[in-house]
Amino acid sequence: MLFKSPLPIIKIPEIPLPNLVLRKTEQLGSKPALIDGSSGDAISYAELGIKAKRLASGLSKRGFKPGEVLGIFSPNCPEYGIIFHGVILAGGTNTTVNPLYTAEELSKQLNDCQARFLVCHPNCLETALKAKESTSLEEIFVIGDEKDGTNSYEVLFGDESKCPEIKVNPEQDLVVLPYSSGTTGHPKGVMLSHSNLVSNLYQFTELEPSGEEDTLIAVLPFYHIYGMTVILNSALSHGATVVCMSRFDLEQFLVLMQKHEVTRAHLVPPIVLALAKHPMVEGYAFPKLKTIMSGAAPLGPELAEDCARRLGCTVKQGYGLTETSPVTHLNPEPPGRVVPGSIGICIPNTECRIVDYETGKDLGTGMQGELWIRGPQVMKGYLNNEEATNQTIDPEGWLKTGDIAEVDEDGYFKIVDRVKELIKYKGFQVAPAELEALLLTHPSIADCAVVPAEDPEAGEIPVGFVVYKENMVENPETIMEFIAQKVSPQKKIRRIIQIEQIPKSPSGKILRRHLRDQIA
Image (cartoon, rainbow, N blue to C red; front, side):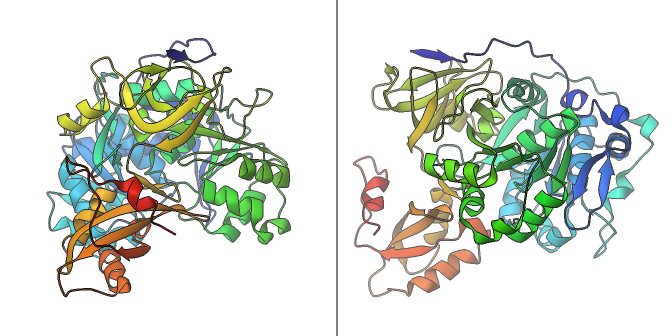
């Protein structure tokens, strides 16, 4: 059975992404586009438009060609918007990197996409310099003043009037390569085109509207597709102001929400939990806050309702994937009906199926199966990985999400389980296969498996089951520290359980559900 959006099909123009996102830069002039939450420094709309063109001009003068890749290795900051769109105006592709990555993780991503340049935040520079030795990076630039012999990214600023006029094929040309583990395995470059991101911005506008009168808070990272599309690019395309946070701190978050009179907040369940339960929230008031939209992990109906009552705003949920740019489902904006616990309805120009995971048979309303999605926001594929692409997208363009869903008679979807193996720690993706590969490098471990365990604050935490080699049992803390030294914080294994044998199917696939059932 085919499920479509109850909203009418919309016409989506075939334009480059900056034509949409930067369309108001001249018109809004001195209005703040991006504000640094810590310092209060702001970049105006006019400055954003001019500096993006200057960056494109300077990159072009340096020989940066259409199709080449530049990495952005930074927490949220106002300069992120300049860099992101300057690269695109030069015809290039961004690869956005988690600022908490280790040098090894960073070098893997940069090598996979063959990034030519890297722009990084000063706090990330030490890691970037370590990673550079094992990559083909030509040069690293730092946001702000030059540091440790590295030039400021401002040396890339050229003549605005010489911004290159690149002929863009919106369907084919890539704007960004975020990395996702997909349904299984190691992180892979997700190839997203101008058309993918432009389509998605048009598709969810009616369900998640913002305008020049709005102020959004960007606590979710811009390197992640949620922050990149739903906050950064969407807000700028509508002339809203974005307040940037480099990391989540509840007190600072509350201060900024109140000080800047934030109207729309895009969050993840752990932050919604804090807003609903933490006593600190009582000391603040948010009279202009209209909507909280939660994504990246399931949000329970009770928690959504508790938060809505406490703050006096709408709390709703949406759904998407890096591979879908990301949005595919949203609860409507009031006065439309918001269903707590539901991810909402299909957005326009999007088709869905509920498929029996074992038989491939289509299922109807009220039945649980894997959610398949088709629409203009679906990625072109995984970079340099045709096999993974073919496993994820079938010949008819259906993307298999790996999530188990059901849909009611009104067209509202609910995620009920996951086929895929990803662990969602505070909304961040953690791939078990990556952690298992690292565990197996420990000299005492013969076999292992990593599974999620429910956690009230993080949503899920990685738990490692290990089989030790004969006479080589280790203290669990030693194993956890071994992994912690090799990965970024969200990937740390939070618990180690010794087991005699890892349960596996005849084909060798780890029976993760059996292990999850053993977690007390």
